[in-house]
Amino acid sequence: MTRGATLRMALRALLRNKTRSALTALGIVIGVAAVIATMALGAGAQARVADAFAAMGTNLLVVFPGSFTSGGARGGAGSASTVTWEDLRAIRTELPSVQRAGPELRAAAQLVSEGSNWNAQVVGTSPEFFEIRHWAIAAGRLLDDGDVDALAQVVVLGRTTADELFGAGVDPLGELVRIRNAPFLVVGVLDRKGKSAMGQDQDDTAIVPATTFQARIQGRVSSSIGGVVLVSAVSADATANAQEEIAALLRERHHLEPGAEDDFSVGNLSEVADSQQQSARTIALLLASIAAVSLLVGGIGIMNIMLVSVTERTREIGLRAAVGARPLDILLQFLAEAVALCALGGAAGVAAGVAISAQLARSFGWATRVDPTTVLLAFGFSAAVGIAFGLYPAVRASRLDPIAALRYE
Image (cartoon, rainbow, N blue to C red; front, side, top):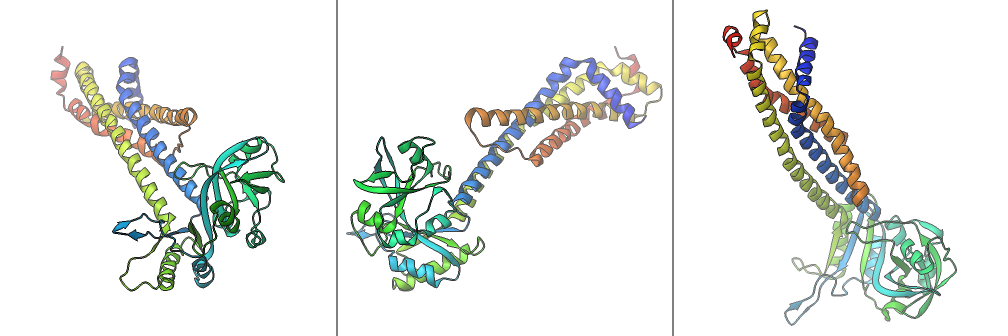
């Protein structure tokens, strides 16, 4: 008997009991759909983390000041002003792996326009900040070195802050905004950046020259940087070298003895990104493994139904054997029925999984990404379940004695 004839006979046998076949395949449908949906959520989470860190810069390093110690009590990282403006200049000019470096001073402040007010993060920085963060201008201009040198009271607004102060679609260029009772001229509005990896709205910000920030927002001018230093390496591959060079330079400049603890720290965002992506990947695999258990349960259900089918069709098996069907033909027919059940259930599960992923994205705003490789693996695994759990009933059917089968009542 040809393979095509065997498959047609298997499909006819399944169609004789449509309801039972559908209920038997339901476990496979649920298992495949669950695997695809959970893997889509995991892939979406990884992509979201990657996009968030890519928006911040794949070759970004952050230099944090150290901590203070007083009376045996130690402050947290950043509690001591150990990184100076001279350190920043040295990082910019002396390290071959560093492309750009700029300060980032932060403070929450109330911004007041003519008709509204809004509390936002005010950032004091230099022109390098926008290149390091890959942040483009949507309207107006960015800060320049002249603004920093002149302590200019100018501000570049993030899109969220601009909309809250002036209204969506309103051009705020040339308008005045008061920050800590000091008037600032709006000279630019930034492109939308979206949420950070921590879920914070990066567009809810107002950016001013670092010198102006010290004088007007902090209220003091100091030789130390009251914040962090953002550094971009010349390439993503050079990030680790830049991190080592910065650490060696600052230890030398701060006159730290060999073995002495650093009074600063250098954070590598690519390491943080890798860690978060690994966590998302682990969670996705765990959920997919749990979902795959339902595939095994579905396989056990298929084995059970196929054993029942062998018992019900004992006389049919005996008749086929009597008219010349070989044991291999009988085995292949029952195995084809099991594989067909799983393949049809797998196809329906793929469609259900893709639909569930799309619905989750629409209803809850969750990031999902259906990977074709995952779809193929889930479908292939469902077919493998059919072979694994259909083999025993098929072998049992092929070994029935034709004479005893014909006498079976």
